[in-house]
Amino acid sequence: MKENILIMKLRENYKYFGGLSLIYGIIFTFCLYKNISGITFPICVGVTIVFAVLFMKKINYRLMKHSLPYLAGMGLLGLSSAFTTSVFMHFFNIVGILLLFMVFMLHQFYNDYNWNFPAYLKRILILMGTTVQSVPYPYWHGGWFFSKNKNIRRNNTMIAIVIGFMVALGILCITLPLLLRSDIMFSKLFGKTLDYINFATLFGISLTFVIGFTLPYAFFVALCRYNLIETSRQYAESGIIMPADGMNPAAAYGRRVRYFDPVIGITFTSIVSFIYLIYCAIQILYLFIGMKAGLPEYVTYAEYARGGFWELLFVSVINFIMVLLCMYLFRENVILKVILTIVSGCTFVMIISSAYRMMMYVGEYYLTFLRILVLWFLVVLALIMAGVVVSIYKGRFPLFHYIVAVVGMMYILFSFSRPDVIAAKYDLAHWKGTSDTDLYYLMYETNSIDAAPEIAKIDLSDEEWGYADNEYMSQSMYNYFLNISEENEGIYFRKANYSRIRAKAAADRYIEEHKNDAGVDSR
Image (cartoon, rainbow, N blue to C red):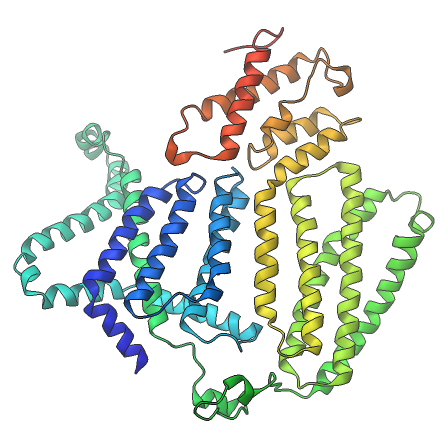
């Protein structure tokens, strides 16, 4: 069986694969321990790609040319993390890199050209579950390797000591702080001695290394278990004829198979689409054409926008899921296709309405990170729905790859856009009539310091800003930049970050220019 052959190859070459995992664990720890935004993050992404290629090369899997876009996307997302201090962007960059890496490896190990959207999602979930199941393998294979290797077995006593020490260290990092807290005398006896040992740091480094060593090996074991291909039983149950030897599989199983009567889909989508059509007609007549005449006197534009935005967004997502399920659960039917097209068209109207309401809200209350994210999501959702409409009429349309490409490219653009900077530029350009609260938001309620260079452009002595002779605001601005300067003092090469460097430079300039201003405490 192919699975057994590949896993046996991993086990028999444990010196190579285990050694690679060990080296990767060290690099992973150095690059990422308490550091997901430094220049070492994209380095770790690059090392991950290199090690994946080395793993595959050893088991005779070559790098396929169609995999290069996935690798480029991973590299760009890794690089973008060193250009922002936004925790939101860092988290979703990691999510994007992991998803791209899984799709890349699935493409390497399987013939995925005929997989539809549900098939891809199913296999990604199976791969994740299989990876978790495979976590013990690096240690099982390691034990087998050391027991079979005579040269290593001679030194098994020393190996046992080292392993025992590492295990004890891991356990003590958890239990010892608890013991110190539980007994005064025990704490008095060992407390001062152990003050020089940071168990939290030791535990964090050890855990990071274990993750960096274990997960790559477990992930490749999961891939080598080769449990994501369709079996003959699965083909038979789905009504698809197994392809003959040498026959193109795509030609054998043709278009997607629907399992349920399309009348079911026609019935409920007809009712839904009827309601949607009425709703969309109202949107066109009152929101897009005659909103001023249609609004009651006691409802402001902002209240109207806020009143329906989230509901429309939620419904749009539901529509996407509904259309997708109808495409894959029901047999092909012309009437159903038309109705799904109507539902998709109504969804576009809802997306436009949602975006219009958000722009009204922005016009009243300015931009924030969340509002930019929502507008970006609406654009992405519209592009995805366009692909869904094409897929309704073109069964072989690669919807999954299209969505991966759209979401990947759009997210890369969003990741490099530094939304906090966009929000700050927009807000400062429309600053008239704002209050102190708006400035405090830009300084203290964003999730990064990306906007610091833009905030530094504010001249509080200028009457246009409305803060002249406001000593409290001057003090707040000065403290804001002083904190940035102090917190980013001595940026080492390992934590170099484009946005952090720019914020530090802007803060230093601001402090130098305003250190002698009246009412400012220079600390």
